[in-house]
Each structure stands twice: as structure tokens, then as C-alpha cells.
Image (cartoon, rainbow, N blue to C red; front, side, top):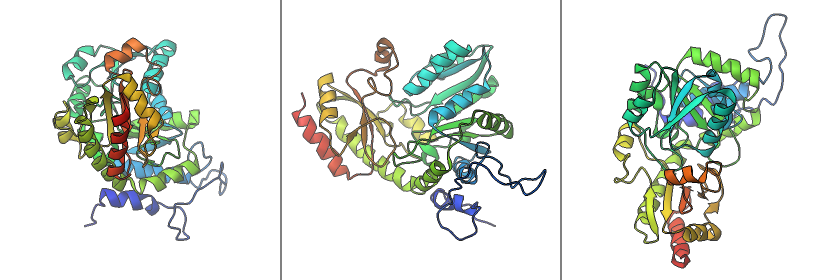
Amino acid sequence: MKKEKDFNTLCVHNAQEFSHDHTGAISTPIYQSATFVHPNVGSSTGYDYSRLQNPTREQLETLICNLEGGQDALAFSSGMAAITTVFQLFKPGDHIVTSLDLYGGSHRLFDYLSSHYNLHFTYVDTTDASSVASSITSNTKAIYVETPSNPMMHITDLQAMSTLAKQHELLFIVDNTFLTPYFQKPFLFGANIIVHSGTKFLSGHNDTLSGFIVVDSIQLSEQLRYLIKTVGSGLSPFDSWLMIRGIKTLAIRMREQEKNALQLAKWLKEHPKINKVFYAGLPDHPGYAIMKKQASGFGSMISFECANASIAQYILNHTSTIHYAESLGGVETLITYPMLQTHADIPEEERNKKGINDCLLRLSVGIESIDDLIHEFDTILKEAY
């Protein structure tokens, strides 16, 4: 019996097994071609035009599909391009229940779809299954969640959401960007569609934009492949190659980043100038038990609330090893001010209700020495007031 490959091995070797190059090249070839020759009338090599499909992108999609355990995966030019395509599955008048705490770009998209295309969104605390259940109406078509959520790190019970979705014949859509299939596999808990900003942990190097949709059925695959070829939002060959290269180290990076994050979260939690630390790997986090049940790790995203706004801004103005920059998931540790960056388009009153205030910082922990990261925070916080 053929042994099923371990996740680590799939990250390194899966795409190469589907190589269309027979030279023995270790690196996946970049098929930098817009179009492909037909052997004769009525026949095709399987590749006609790169907007429809490209061999390098296909290898990446096969890799992502296998890592998530889906039926098909589609690679897009950004995470938001992927999410936008998912919502093209719906019609005017359809209703979607979604997490109250979401990436600001998703909020912006949903508000736009609501005002321009008559899609209706209800933002709900998806950590409370009863609140989700009471928000479902006759025209509800989907439940959409981030878990952990961005930036407050709320944890949604995937099995509970899946049960509700099945009861009401809804699509269940999960943004798995923060944990990746290394730590969390939503299909095991009943998800129908998984989305990723591949720019983040899947790439891991802050050098390319990408997004992914992974589906659990051929029907969804056919609908979405029609959309990607029509709109033309597929990932380029070179960026597909960068993603394949980045994923080779996914397992190693995720382990090291999580190890650093847990130590840093514990250190921040004890600091007198830090009021709160939001990290699902801390046992007193409200979602800790659910994470233990549905994920194999906690990831490396931390948000924390400083004692006052001036301390938060002092940290941002004095980092060196840690970089004040948007995005997350790379090998470099990045710190972000959500109220001015990722969630700036959300009205201030709404932001404050969510806890996204002028004291909140979001940290994507990298693979640097944990001693260096703690030393930098210690030095800065001694001087901050």
C-alpha cells in the first residue's frame, strides 16, 4: 500500500510530482507564456491561454488543494481578488451572515457589495452559535467566518457553524489565512469553501501578492473556474513560482513562528504597560479550548492593548528589528496599528466597539531570535510613557 505523504513532505515535493518539464529540473519551471500552440484543429495540450490556465499556476493550485484536502483550488492575484470572486456566486437580495471581527479589506468589500449589488450582510459574534442562528433568514445563503479573527483573535467553533450551515442549506466559507492548512483544516469540520490571502503565511516572505479559493465540490469548482477565466484575476506564472518556493518551508516557518509567538505573548502579558494580550495560545483566552479541538497549533498572530495611546505610538516610532508595516505572515516580525492601517475604513465608533482603539497594536511574529524580539520590546517599553 502506498504511504500517504506527511504534510512537510507535500510542501516540498508535491508540485514537483506534477511537473510538466522532463529535464530533471528541481525547481518548478516558470511557463512565462500568454498563449499555447494547438497541435491541430479541435485538439489542445490542455493549455490554451494563461488567463484560463497556466502550467505553473496549475502546479501551485494542485499543491494548495492537496494541503487543504479539497476537490480543487484556484490561485488569484490577491487575497481580496479571491474573496471578491467567492461573492460573485451570490445574487442581488441574498443574505450572508459574517463574523463581526474581520479584516478591514473584507469589511470594505462587503459594504461595497451591499450598497452597489444589493447583497445583504449581517455582522455577528460568530463565537456565539445562538447569535448566528438567530441571524439566519429565509434569504440567507452563506456563513462566512475568520478564525482566528483579524485583529481581535476571536475563535469560532467550526463544527458548530458547519452544523448550522447544513441545517439551513447554506454555504460555509472560512478564511484560513492566519493558521494555514498546517495548523487548521476547515474541510474536516464541514467547510465548503476556504479562502486565503496567500500573500501572508503561505508565501512567507513578503515578496508577492496572491489569494486562493479551495472548494469541496466539483460544482463549486466549475462555477468559480468560469468566473476566474471570465474576469481574468488568476495569478501570474512568476508569482505562482514564488508561492511554490515559499510553501516549501511552510511547516518549518509555522512551527518557529508559533514558538516565538507563545513566548512573546507570555512576556507581554506580564508587562505593566500592556493592559491586554489577545493570543489564542494563552490558556486564559476564551477560545483556547476550541482551538485545541479544531487546530493543531495557535499560529503567530498577537494583538495587544497598551496602557495608553502614547505608549502604542512610541513603540511604533522606535522599533528596529521589528518593522512597522502592514501585512503579516512573513519571516520578518511586523507590527501594525489597525486603527490607522488595516481597519482605517471602518468608522471610529464601530472600531472602538470592536476594541480596535488607539491603544491596540497587531503583531505578526517572525522567525528572528526570540531573545532579540523580547529585548527590543523591553528596551522600548522602559522608555515609553
